[in-house]
Image (cartoon, rainbow over the protein chains, first blue to last red):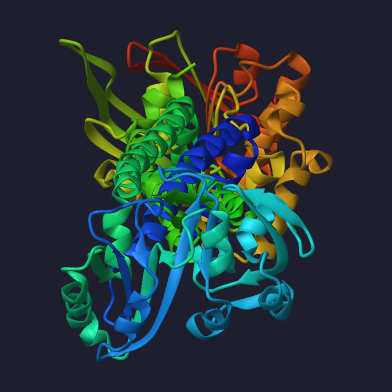
Length: 382
Length: 251
């Protein structure tokens, strides 16, 4: 028996029953699109909330405040924090957002001292425009590339949001996806234009020399300002995200059920399509067995069909999800934090493998049906 | 390239027994009753013989044909086809035996509708791992040529007439060069002209290529094409008609 010939027969069954196959593939693709979208959200969230051994950034926020509009800290804390042992860099940041609640299209301005940005975020590269122009212009903004694409901005444009009108001095790219969804402006400019006033910031981002010192430095910062008028709450960056964006996290956690639903829908769809095909092809299976095809070969033709349908639907669904997220550049925002939904090849490949596996599982029962019907009675059918 | 190896002059033409049934019975349960379509049947068929089986519906013709083809197994008795007792083979062994030794021609052709004529004829050859793709294609082309359908290789069953479909089915049955061909009312669904073409082909395989053919038919004209006709009634042989002439009978 030429076992390698069986996938060819299965492929012919698929390509020569075009309408039926197209409907099944479209159904699988829809399910796998949903699954990949959910997994992309989960993966993006995990990337910004799951702490790692090399995390070295702390966020200093106003105690008991969760929104950037209510977290107000004196800018002069900067000097006190810098003096704490183990701190390597501190940058004061004023955040202004159009929406503190969970939103799919959040506009975030980060006001930073222009002389500190390059030092604090060396991975930030200017893709278009000029860093110097930004430094030299008080209303200048360095716009993250996803933000710019979403809003159709290019260097030289001006735009207004959150009551702040800025000039686009450059488009920036960062390996940290959140940075690609915000606009960096001068700290003093944002303090004045958003009317929080000079000398007031939303938070401090603190970098420590040694990741092992992360928690001890956080404790010392909070102890330092505990009796001050504006006490602080200092947490590692990822823990800060996980705590501050709780609504977002709960929402994304819920989508797991959608992913599971998508998986079950794909399983049911392929199984149903193949079972109907198996029932409609009982005589065909009997003919093959009469010609000398072993029963297992008749079943394997069905199994291959399931796997190929899974592969085709998986490819269409997973890849369209990747394209969707890549070109739409979605960002979920909550409490001034942004979560960029970034397509990930691990998610895509696992989606493809899952689609093929679902196709295989779904085809087991139809394969048993197709291969175990008695030949003589099957040949008598209509 | 030929599909068959023509017999040599030393073959014991018409003398050697190819199929031997001894005390063959077949019973199966239908609801609460046991049905016995064949009972204690004895039969010998010579190598290269063209045998027709006739009889009323329910007389056991197709059951006997299925037993001889190895699609079904007898409940009791021995059924030998060319030194192989089919009654002793298990289902998987019967399947492997069919692939090598038996070609089956159905009344309703039973071609796989999504495959072209060429691909349908190629199907049984996919079971032979020793054949290269080139050899396979060459055999398929030869088989289609033999049934006069070389120019219809790329057509699907729905694009062929009934007679052409049956000739494709015959090409599929002979492409592996089996010693035995069984045909279940091969002309039952055909007009007279197509039936004549099919019967001519079967006679050619019997007389020129020494294929043993067992054909079930209701049609006396079709039975006339065979060398011998047996009548079955209630699972028993009731009459034998021996045609002595070696010349094919005009249909």
